[in-house]
Image 1 (cartoon, rainbow, N blue to C red):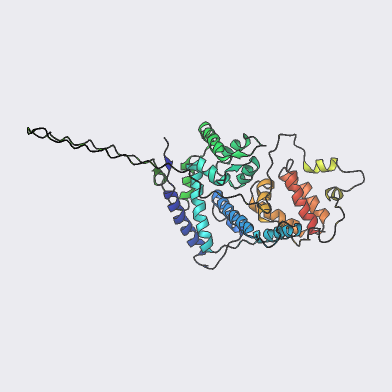
Image 2: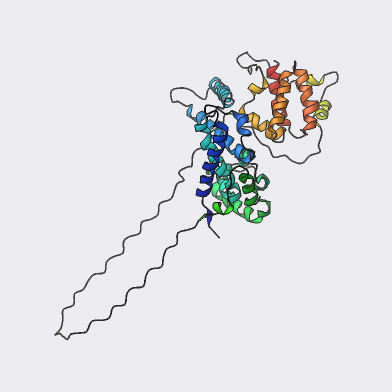
Length: 393
């Protein structure tokens, strides 16, 4: 069956649910606003919250792309550094009122339902972003915003060639084959609807409307006309009528996707690496093994910095909470704290209360690393340690 689910029913439900939830949240406080952490816990369905965040980051990248002018050198090192710092500060200042948040929430609800109803459409919209090409690294980065059926999409991305730039059409063909072979990994739509029913009732059949290819009705048979009675006439003149030529068929023009756009270069996008299986070694033991004789653990953790001018050094930060950009925050939550937002905030808050870098790094290496098993999270741990260095510089 080639029918596709219509987007209209889930978009209508998304608007109703968004209005309902916003009435509950903003009803008594119409001028209230939401920040990033509030968005991440706005609904009990984590996928909805993540899709709101993904839309915000899309807008964020568009803002970065607009900061261009033919009159100035935006590729100069100082300009790029200043823009990066500016956009990272801006990303930590999410402020959503009801008029701006409600449409994002409505779209996120519809997109969440689409994950179960139309996995291929979700892959094209949420991972590929409908771009003409993609790399495995880009697809892995987009996986951060998937919670529902994540294993199904992760298995597909892990099976792709890592060193190639992949064409969209080829990826869509591969994905359809993957979907046919791995339907058992998909969560049933009924399970997701049960979660939504806790917020606003909806029936599965209300979302099952499909859009089928138009059916062309068969042409009606030509009416049978009785032949007229022949009247004899001496040699009647016969008029020859030239047949009416068929109109020429217009040659169809190739369709160009209206929403295809050049990929914007993000200011700060954490990389997601494919991790090969390895023997688990605690982070503390790994650091200790590389520690020179007579050197403390804090000295081992502290990277050697080459001499640099004051202008070239990263600026000191007052708190880790303010220094961590929105991209880094979501990366740390997903990669270091298993997606647990509150545990991340508790750990960062504790780090901000410590008095020196040695205490902070000891807390990271001896407590957090063992608690959350950071044996293969060196890249993200190093980013956190660098931020600690900046705080206590």
